[in-house]
Length: 393
Image (tube, rainbow, N blue to C red; front, side, top):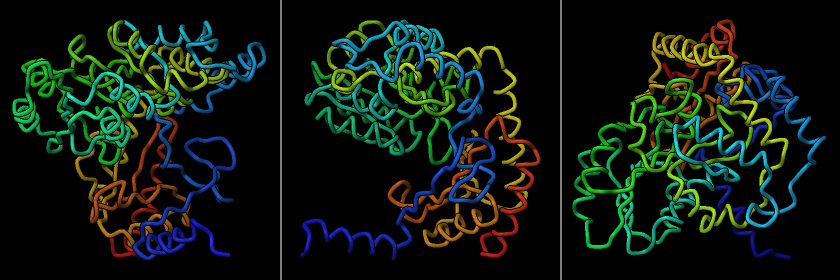
């Protein structure tokens, strides 16, 4: 008997024919510089675990202690009975990490972005957003019902014009950008954007998901990297990348955080993070403080791997960070490239439309502090050999 969702089989077949169908691999053990996926041991260049903290012994011990002492979950949303002492401690620590007055934890970086944009604006307001901003920013903008204006990637002059054109009495304006762009690994021109926001009296918001723990002194992020403390109103971050666990946060003025306690829908309507995750996040901040060499290794490995890719003749686009795409353009060729790399022991996924524009397909590599030079050397050898085999270099 035909089902109401049978039409999806045809749509999936179309994606497959276009080289756009995703094939999810399964991790069969702890994540790390080397890991096991789908029965194969590989050099893992697919993880956002920048500082190698996800399986750090101190993190594992902190999570286990919290689960034993405080339980597997809180049993309630934050505003009813789910705010624990450790939630507030993590928020205090993150506010200090970001040089902000206060912070609030969300269930994910996605909900932090989407929930905040929707909470601070309304349909009479306007959002001016970088063309390559993360999907969570786009969804939050839509949920807010505000007018959305999109400026060309990293073009502060274009953002300036859009803010000028959209000015109106009693209309709030939000200028928003990623700090580090997740597909290209380039850094936002935050100083120029901050000047634009200040000139128009706009709210300045930066999504620092891929910069927190990576850029700035001690990994404090893009705002610290450019020395802009006190000039960015809303800092968004995640606890699932360099911090190595799960969750998101907003850091900013106290009135913003109190407003999100009252109007941030993901905060209001989702059970709070479990003690194990919160304890591991707090421990991660301690490790970042105690082991600064991790950040140094991350950047040393990044520089070495980029240099090796360039010497092999690959196009890494505008990358300035540990996110280093190898841009091939063609979707089917990129899927074949990722598949052959995996077969040869290197895991980095194919990124195709709609995650990136058509004709901009790439495999995305991310090195971490835990990769050794031997790991990176072996990966580069495979890249060179498979790239030649497929005519991609």
